[in-house]
Length: 114
Figure 1 (cartoon, one colour):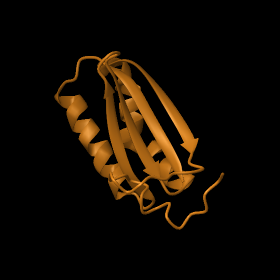
Figure 2 (cartoon, helix red, strand yellow; figure 1 turned 60 degrees about the vertical axis):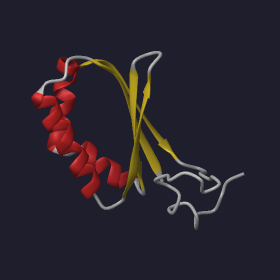
Figure 3 (cartoon, one colour; figure 1 turned 135 degrees about the horizontal axis):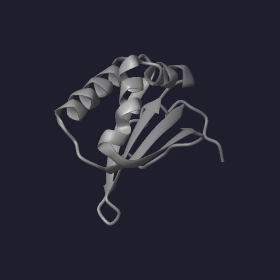
Figure 4 (cartoon, one colour; figure 1 turned 90 degrees about the horizontal axis):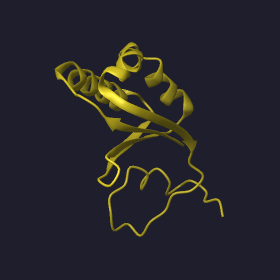
């Protein structure tokens, strides 16, 4: 499993940004291998992180190669004050079941690395 974490500083969002953002989210959710997502905002820094979870790297790459995602990357400087992307392989995920999480069901049968 993999994560793609997109952390950014907000700039000026317009209707075009919101429309493209919604399209990309819908595309991501439609890709076989998409497991879920979470969003976080750090009020102290003003940064926002969107974490997408993927079953395979191929699924993640499908989103990254999609024309809508490419268009957003080309226009990012118009809407954002900066960004960072981190792609990571998930080696372990666990919890007590007290909160919902995109990987809760996906990792139950996966071996845990200690």
